[in-house]
Amino acid sequence: MTDSGTADRLQAARQRLRVKLAVRVDANRLLVDASLNNGTGQVVHVFNVLWDYAPSGAIAAPDSPAYVCIDGQELRLACRPLPNPPGRKMIVAIDPFLTPLDAGADMRQELSFDVPVQEYSCYFRREASSPVQVVESARARFIFGVAVGASDGAFAPSPIQGALQLANPTKLAGIVIVESDPVACKVQVAQRKDAFTRF
Image 1 (cartoon, rainbow, N blue to C red):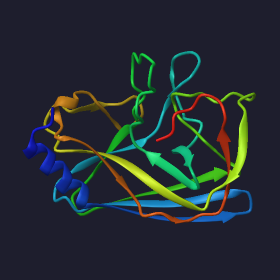
Image 2 (image 1 turned 90 degrees about the vertical axis):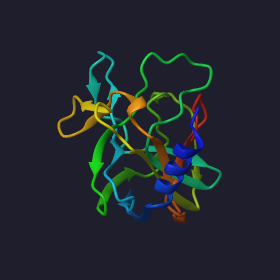
Image 3 (image 1 turned 135 degrees about the vertical axis):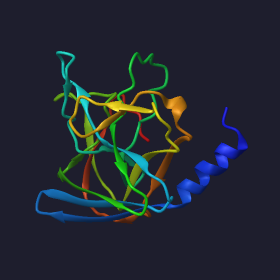
Image 4 (image 1 turned 90 degrees about the horizontal axis):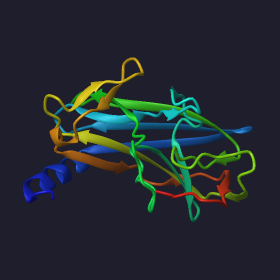
């Protein structure tokens, strides 16, 4: 259980992390420019290096540069740990690896997606036969997950060079989820009609 001091610390960090988003549709591509400013006064760690498991069990590149879902008319793009699927036992969480972000610094993510944009979650693999319905978004939002208040032993090197993996969550004050304001974004999205948990 989080004590009130830790909850206050996390809330203060959340208020000092700013996400900006710009999107543009160019021919058959959705171009996304998302940035995170760290105004917390301390180093934080951003869950921005997505990965997945290949059928062989090896670590592989994800099918998408960000997690994607459409909620109503809002296209949600995320670099953050996803909630575990309800009702499913998870042996290993597929949380993104992390990159440190110094106090006062900005992190920029420039991403490109095919149109129609595909919904993507590491926990619900899309097959060629997965049923979809093409819908149109009206706006977009970008979401980052950020680890704050880390002490020694929280992270270890990851299998991807330059990125860290969370080794001991008890060595963090916690993880905060920070979102951009919504921006206008009219683009086709292939909404999954099979088992899929949105965020």
